[in-house]
Every structure is written in C-alpha cells, then in structure tokens.
Length: 294
Image (cartoon, rainbow, N blue to C red; front, side, top):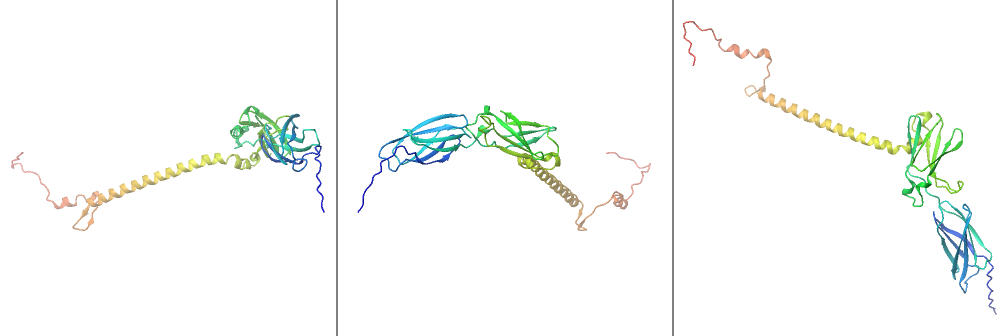
C-alpha cells in the first residue's frame, strides 16, 4: 500500500543555494534555486544590489518558472563591493551573498630612470588596455622603505611619470603605481610594484633588472651590431690591400724574371754600373776629326 502526499508550496521560504558563479570588472553572474522544487507557475523574484562603498541600492525584478535561475548583474564598478539579496516578490525570507568585482589591472612597463638627485618613475597608460579607465582618474604612487619598515603615500598624478626626490643613501625602496583609489581608498586598481636598491651598493638591483632590461638591450644590441659591421669592413679593407700588394709584387717579380737563369734578379743601386763597365769607354774627339751633325 502507498499514499501520495502533495506538499503545499510555501511562498514565505527564501531562495535556495544563492551563490556567485562568475565576476568581472563590471558584472557578476549569480545563481539560485527556487524555494521549492518544480514550481507550477511563474515566480517573481526581487534582486536587491547594495553598493557597500557608495551606500546605494538598486532593485531588479526577475520573473521565471525555472527551478534553477541564473541572473547577470550589470553596470558594476571595478574593485567594488556589493551585497546581493534575493527574495520572492511578496517580501518573503531572503538569501544574500557578498560579491567583489575584479579591480582594474596594474599599469604595464613600470620602470625607473635615475637622474642626478632624483629618480623618475615611468609606466604605460592604463587606458590602453582598460576601457573602463579614464585618464582623468589618475594614478597614485606609494613607496615602501624596507630599512625603516615604513610605507608612504607620495601623491597622485594624471601623467604617466612621477618624480621622486630626497631618497636616502643605503635604503632599499619599493615603489607601487596603481589606478587612483576612490571613495576613501575603497576602490583601487591593482598595483604595479618595482624594487629599487642601488643607491647604497652602486650595483645592479632588482629595479635595474626589472626596469632597465629593455633600455640596456636597446643600447647594447645596436652597439654590438655597429662593432660587427666595423670589424667586417676592416677585414674587407685589409684583404683588398693584401691582394693589391700581392699582385704588385707578382708583377714586379715577373718584370725581373730571367729566363736564362730561371729566376728573378733584383739588383741594388751599386750594381747598376756593372754592365756599363763591359761596354767600351767613349773617348774624347780629336780636334782634326770633323764633327758632322745631322
């Protein structure tokens, strides 16, 4: 024997298993189940989004008969903090979940250039890869002194560089650059961090390795290329000169070759008169011999 029992739906129950599926910089996907299985009619849900930073509320309505509901909340802010509450439209018991959106990315290519009495921090514009970032928001710069164990806020700028002065010799510093924090430092971008410790040691530091690798390569590679080209030209010139000298010597030797002796004969200036000694000496003319001039 058996009996079939049908439970009376209780619309005062809260939605079940409310959780966040995926979050981005400006959206969040949430998912929940109906208060009871297999609803036989459309159910109206109220989705309240409370901005914990701005202290504002937004309410969205979702009407569906599905047992499992997936909903995307849009127009959120990067790095924001939200409390999402879902309940039936009749103001039944509620279910809630906290959501943190993804913050803005860290600036790329942060590097340090050392001047006489200060350093310059350079980085790429964050607007190149973040469509949600406006340059008017600017950046803020922090510095950590590892020797003193102190973190200092250096200031903010809307440019892509920042000048840092009054650094102490022998201290190691870490600099970070990030999208400027909003609403009392509650909504910030991810920081880009760079180490700088070459003031005291005078040797290559992490900052030099991280921030100057590209610059060193950009200088060394062209110099090495020019050296190779110069050496190549020098070898070509020396080879051409060697060939010309060899050809000149060969021509000179051939011009002094004696087929009778089978060798080349080279004579000094003192030997130039040897053949003339064998020729008869020309004597003077007698006065009684008439001279005929043709």
